[in-house]
Image 1 (cartoon, rainbow, N blue to C red):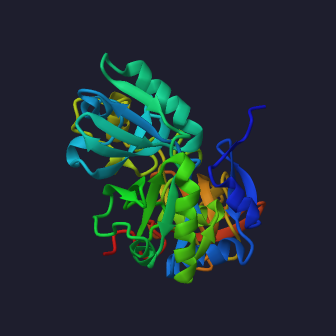
Image 2: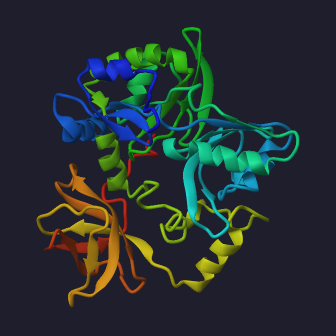
Image 3: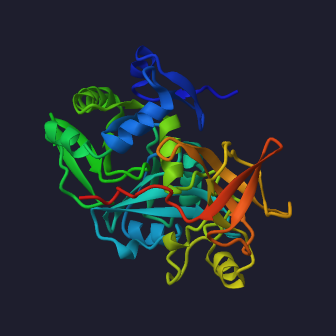
Length: 367
């Protein structure tokens, strides 16, 4: 059995009494004492929260033509953004399955920084390395950097108190020195609220966390675990790799075709995905808003009024904001917005309405 990895601030979580669990091979905090997932979720929606997401991968592709090389591999089109901007993208197989979804940060024509998911970083780096032409270097920097997410309506106040930049646009990043320490400040996140992801060097992540946490608490916020991050992302309809995207669930099926540069000359899986998009015969992801009592979970069957199976839940949870169950589900194309369906939760038929995510008001682009 592989040794479980820990973040550079693992000791802080243990000292705070966090409930820990495995995430992609990493021992990470799920929730903290003092309210748990619901309180942490609410803090982000109403004030501010801080997350350790250092388990996320980090990689760098550099050398002459690095941008064009990455663009020929991953789905989204780097030609749509300028240096200093970030972009959601996917790494697909030739048959269109999703190896990983990740964020790519364009530093320049010769330098692209990537943040994949923890469990998929090695595979993404291996694929890029195998495809890289001479002169292009692909580095796995998984444990060279930490990642701290500050998310919520008061996230600007937290960063401003520490002298960190807050005036850049959504999906952009700034590289600065903070008290002599180099950090990347990214206007990104996976909660649906205005927020930032701060990327410091691995060995100084603790110092940055301590300073940020003190300001988060001063703004009425709290440390948040990956349990709240999951309920927050589900309320937004953001996909989780392994649930809503996988080798069997393509970008087309997952409603993520917007993150595909269809007009690009090439990217991994282009022919298969284009054929799938044209055929219009696969299931599609829908949002399900539970109207009865019950919490849907992954793999629950979705049925029509006659009991016919018309879909399967890929992500399901209790929404702390709405105080009811919500789910993402792969459904037959005959399923339309507004339809009434039932979710089979351990033999109980839970009524739900088909809707389009997000389930809550979007604040991610708020200025």
